[in-house]
Image (cartoon, rainbow, N blue to C red; front, side, top):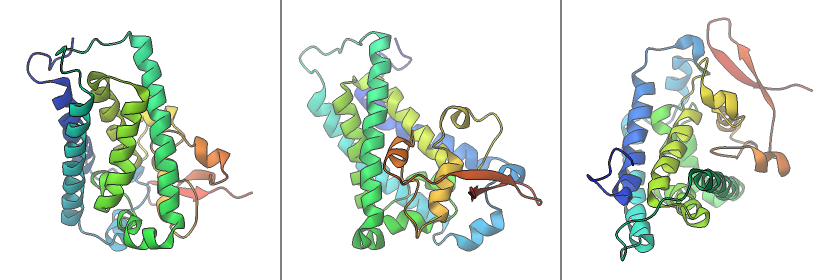
Length: 256
């Protein structure tokens, strides 16, 4: 039993709940006080280095979410059990396994597509470089991508995770909302004390910040959950957090 049962379908929630969660979570970060003591970059750096205004970022994210919603509706339409009108939820341990499988599938898809977009000069110049116009990432810009990248990297990755894991539309609501929150957190630019993601995921805000700062190098492609493929394939680069004298932290490469 979930709170939306009897009001809207699981398929509707699976399509639109991640979008709502994105703007609520990212918007909360955006509306927080400056929190300069926890920032990985100063606001001056953010204003000087980023190559795209906030308004364009918001429009780009909304465009990507429109495409995601259309694909999600099509996906749920094709996979929903129309004849029974109701899908029986598997036992909770089965859903946990489906979650883990979906995380691995999404990580695998995004790692190799993301890596190829960096290694292929044409794709980087004309597609992936749009995401890297945010040299200093912030929460609302987590899904700021070229529309084709949004389709290939995020939308197709999510669809594959859903299909291969075998999860129901109801389970997918929770999985996609979780993935969205994790993605936003990785781009928020803040190292907040007690952040649960920093306790359980090495692939975190600082990990992805290193990737954005080293745009000319080939490291830390993994997203959004685990750094497994970076470690296995030699694209992982270690870092350390250093407290800045003027406040906040800085993610620096570890010296041998």
